[in-house]
Length: 65
Image (tube, rainbow, N blue to C red; front, side):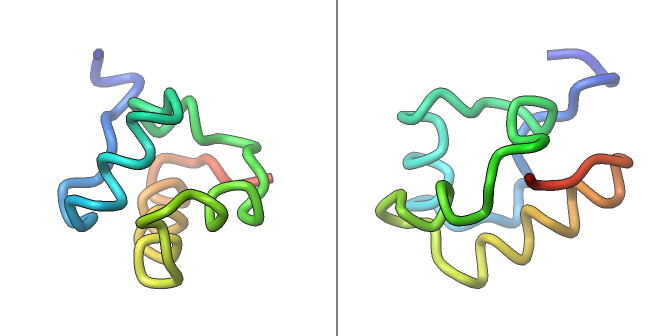
Protein backbone atom coordinates (compact mmCIF):
# COMPACT_ATOMS: atom_id res chain seq x y z
CA UNK A 1 0.00 0.00 0.00
CA UNK A 2 1.34 3.42 -0.93
CA UNK A 3 0.37 6.96 -0.05
CA UNK A 4 -1.20 7.19 -3.51
CA UNK A 5 -3.59 4.36 -2.60
CA UNK A 6 -4.68 4.82 1.01
CA UNK A 7 -5.94 1.77 2.80
CA UNK A 8 -9.42 1.40 4.20
CA UNK A 9 -10.50 4.10 6.65
CA UNK A 10 -9.58 3.34 10.24
CA UNK A 11 -12.93 4.64 11.50
CA UNK A 12 -14.88 1.74 9.98
CA UNK A 13 -16.19 -0.86 12.34
CA UNK A 14 -14.46 -4.22 12.49
CA UNK A 15 -17.36 -6.09 10.79
CA UNK A 16 -17.31 -3.70 7.82
CA UNK A 17 -13.54 -3.87 7.52
CA UNK A 18 -13.59 -7.68 7.60
CA UNK A 19 -16.38 -7.84 5.03
CA UNK A 20 -14.61 -5.47 2.65
CA UNK A 21 -11.29 -7.31 2.94
CA UNK A 22 -12.99 -10.69 2.46
CA UNK A 23 -14.57 -9.32 -0.73
CA UNK A 24 -11.13 -8.24 -1.96
CA UNK A 25 -11.34 -4.52 -1.19
CA UNK A 26 -8.13 -3.56 0.61
CA UNK A 27 -7.74 0.11 -0.26
CA UNK A 28 -9.74 3.14 -1.35
CA UNK A 29 -8.60 2.89 -4.96
CA UNK A 30 -10.15 -0.56 -5.14
CA UNK A 31 -13.49 0.87 -4.00
CA UNK A 32 -13.56 3.65 -6.59
CA UNK A 33 -16.47 3.23 -9.00
CA UNK A 34 -17.92 0.25 -7.10
CA UNK A 35 -21.70 0.71 -6.84
CA UNK A 36 -22.89 1.50 -3.31
CA UNK A 37 -25.61 -1.13 -3.72
CA UNK A 38 -22.91 -3.78 -4.13
CA UNK A 39 -21.17 -2.74 -0.92
CA UNK A 40 -24.28 -2.66 1.26
CA UNK A 41 -24.97 -6.26 0.27
CA UNK A 42 -21.85 -7.24 2.20
CA UNK A 43 -22.68 -8.44 5.70
CA UNK A 44 -21.27 -5.82 8.06
CA UNK A 45 -21.43 -2.84 5.68
CA UNK A 46 -24.36 -0.69 6.68
CA UNK A 47 -25.34 2.95 6.20
CA UNK A 48 -22.83 4.24 8.74
CA UNK A 49 -19.89 2.39 7.18
CA UNK A 50 -21.02 3.39 3.69
CA UNK A 51 -21.11 7.05 4.72
CA UNK A 52 -17.61 6.85 6.17
CA UNK A 53 -16.36 5.17 3.00
CA UNK A 54 -17.91 7.89 0.85
CA UNK A 55 -16.29 10.60 2.99
CA UNK A 56 -12.87 8.95 2.73
CA UNK A 57 -13.23 8.45 -1.01
CA UNK A 58 -14.26 12.07 -1.50
CA UNK A 59 -11.26 13.26 0.52
CA UNK A 60 -9.04 11.20 -1.79
CA UNK A 61 -10.70 12.62 -4.91
CA UNK A 62 -12.54 9.34 -5.64
CA UNK A 63 -16.16 8.25 -5.52
CA UNK A 64 -18.39 5.19 -5.52
CA UNK A 65 -20.05 4.13 -8.74
